[in-house]
Image (cartoon, rainbow, N blue to C red; front, side):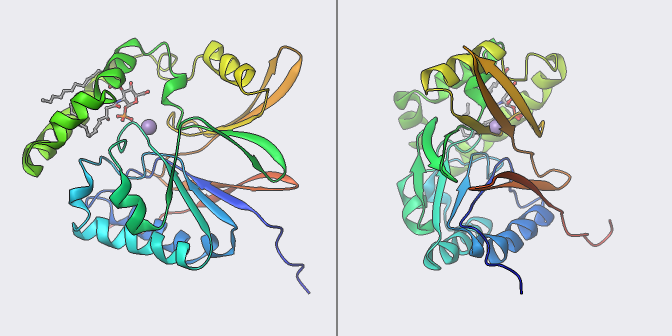
Length: 253
Ligand code: LP5
Ligand code: MN
């Protein structure tokens, strides 16, 4: 007989859901209808959506579908929490209420599988990416957000499209090192939070790193994006396991 599964949490990030990628949506829906139901809690660590321009888009077909699927997990007594990413930082209280999910601050320190674990999106660790950090300060400013959200949906969508395009262009000109986390930023955040285990996404470089900080050995687990298939991290009392999440084959692929 198979022993019952240990209580566990599942973490995912960087899906970048959009109407252009029904394969990624299908993979998420499979995850939410399947493995998520056996978890105690699931954590969506940012950039679930390719971009989010305000909760007044919740009735768009993709958003309705995804929110209903998350809600069904929450209604099955699984705790659902999400964190903002650099593309969906405008997810707000209406999204949380409809999805049955709570918003986590970045960073959040909590006990997972009995171990102190720090959850982050990961963008704030990329401190050598000075242009991005300046952009981040601008778009996280409440006055900027109020002004942005006051504009019509189509104007906001156009600006988000321009920002996405500019970002893809800028990334061609930046070195891989600049777009990765800065070791000094990782060390600082681990020191500040008492040398926990760290889990984050954003860099799209799945790995498990070991950092020695002030004589403490800390693991840093990095989630994958889902562009060519994703993953989730399963955390229980025995540690962390990476589980692949393949994308379904699409017609014409
Ligand atoms: O997201 P990704 O993986 O491509 O790259 C990120 C950083 N880029 C971003 C930008 C987002 O992709 C786009 C955000 C859409 C949000 C929609 C709502 C709010 C809209 C606000 C509109 C102004 O986060 C990228 C990092 C990379 O991660 C690795 O860490 O390098 O950073 C940048 O590319 C930032 C640029 O270096 C500097 C800023 C260029 C943006 C210019 C915006 C022009 C918009 C004009 C609107 C009128
Ligand atoms: Mn990101």
